[in-house]
Length: 288
Image 1 (cartoon, rainbow, N blue to C red):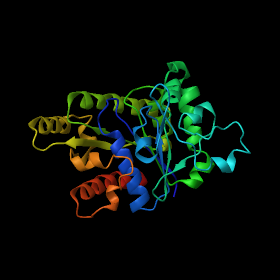
Image 2 (image 1 turned 180 degrees about the vertical axis):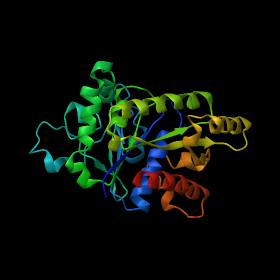
Image 3 (image 1 turned 120 degrees about the vertical axis):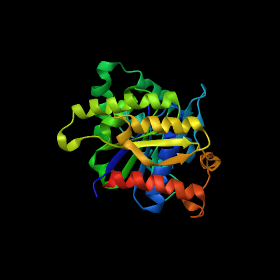
Image 4 (image 1 turned 135 degrees about the vertical axis):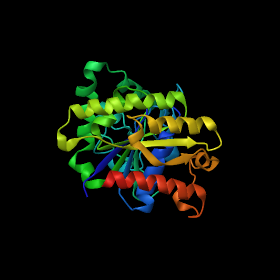
């Protein structure tokens, strides 16, 4: 099976990108046995902290822990300090994924300060120094041999890191809250996807898997109103997935470091049922 790369993105914050990235990775690895790689391109490191005990630097930023294989490589790579991150892809030309507590699931974690450095490049440097380089790295033969699917979690911005993620991806999914800022970010994401595709060949188009109504609350009339508006929108409506994720407390509990995956719990639990329905729908579209 050819490797697939899926970005989870929205220009606005608080849309549940990290939760969805985590669940997609766990569904692929635990339920499907796919060799899965998560890549955290958000300097906040929220996805990384779900799987690794991150260290904290003197400015309060997050730093990956010492890699568990450091002792195996330190003699051959004396300049390596034992920490790898997604920023290392640009700063050092290499980054070794970390294993997680789940079989088949690895992660390239964030490094807060170093990712901020990468994201400060100006527009003229984005594609030559960020987007193209990241794409080349992800699509090396080594990664294609090691992984079946890559899921990239992004920061809420239109900066170089988000553009790099889309440039490297085969697919993109956009989670959104039923609130004005999140919904307003959808048009911008769709526009950026079109810009990315304008520079790609017809057989290498970035595919929009769909827009996921996330943190949905059926008891709020405003959520129902936003859903109706999006369905009627000629640009957004056709891309809305025919399922939602609700704003349930169990999802928040699953984001605590060390918590078991929802997919290791009871198959009758409402969180398991809904999360699997959502993730299966997305992954099937990505693998198609």
